[in-house]
Image (tube, rainbow, N blue to C red; front, top):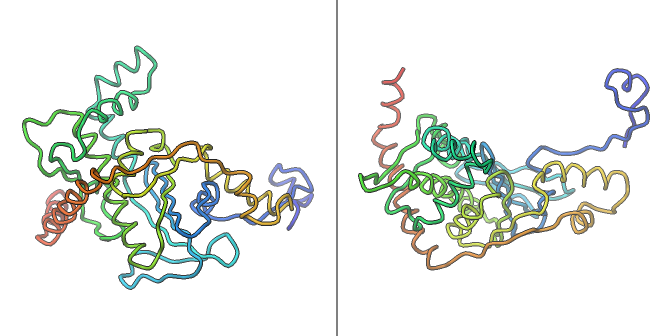
Length: 297
């Protein structure tokens, strides 16, 4: 462990003698700050984008070359993770462009417009009455690696009301995450529990949607800023306050809530998930997305 020198202090503003501890990348710190440092745990951060990370005791390589494998901040351990370009930003697009009444009501009441959206979504049946959102509003990375992919609604009718789009977006983003989780499982990663962090974890209805789509228990950490907590844990270990990352996590990470999957709804979502994947594949294989992108140039 190093300390801030007098010269470095003059350049940075840090106090001379401040101890420096090697940390990790943002998602690695998030994994630590949520307690995803044990076999069987997957951590999903749903913010503007989304990142899904799985802890591994050893390296598991992806023959499809969709997911990367790297060493973990926890010494001798490994992880696999990847990105969704548009997660919470997809719902934010809905809020900005379609939830105008909720935005206006928010100005009058001071209640977050997302709270109104969540209430509306909770009243809509799983599956959004046959409406599926393919949430590639900023193209698709894992597992398709398709720069031409675009956001798509399948099954829209005159009968669908505006909030149905919001539910379909929540479900579509979660379907995209499920594809990543299933690829991890196909690579040999054991998955028992999923921990959710990020802004979307404030939505009870979205948390339940995730549990139902994954068919796995979903846990919500007590501290929302899990990345900062993970960095603090590494600092505490580096300072010698704890003997190991595992010991620090046991003391510093707490779970505030949990959601159990409804397996009957999970079975329903399994059928929707098949349509979701087939719809994307049909459009991509026919070159529809690529042709649209090139027409728009």
